[in-house]
Length: 240
Image (cartoon, rainbow, N blue to C red; front, side, top):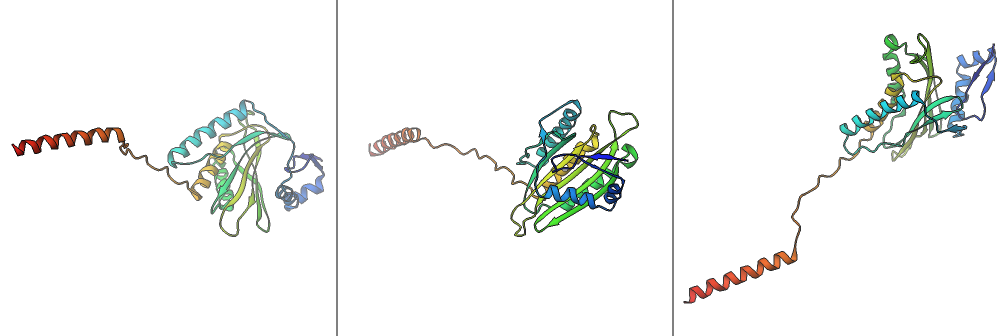
């Protein structure tokens, strides 16, 4: 029995046997995926969009607008999407102070478990890898397919990046991949991660504009001349 798995960070798909499947259960192959991801090797990808991806991005856009209302001054990150090997991907950077990547991955787990009964959300495997300040987390999951009646659609969530030991700026990338189509859960995972990362490092609210009167030298000069003329007339009247 053989299965083909797209490895994020590799240059080609890996074909492995039943013995390798047993290794996956023990987390060894999952660690290999995280190690590759941690090294920052990129895979062939292309900008692509179909109705499945477009619908997911539309829902994410609605969620971002809600975040902007809730957090004035929020600067939306650049969200990239397309095809990476044979999977859809949606990703965005997270840069800021006190970014708790582990908390973000726990939040993702919670969202998947929340739709266990309604959308057949299920966590298939989790893993993590750390090398100094570099850290990666992985969740493989499945949820009800939005196009195949009764079927499931598998996906993965990665968080990788650098945790700053000096507590200045942490830098991570949040990546969601799907193999077939998108469920509402997938968009909700992205929206929740965007909002949580914003809450961890909230933006400074925009400064209120002041309606201060503008100084006009010409107008003030005329006003001064008028006052001087008035004062002169008054003094002459007093002399008489």
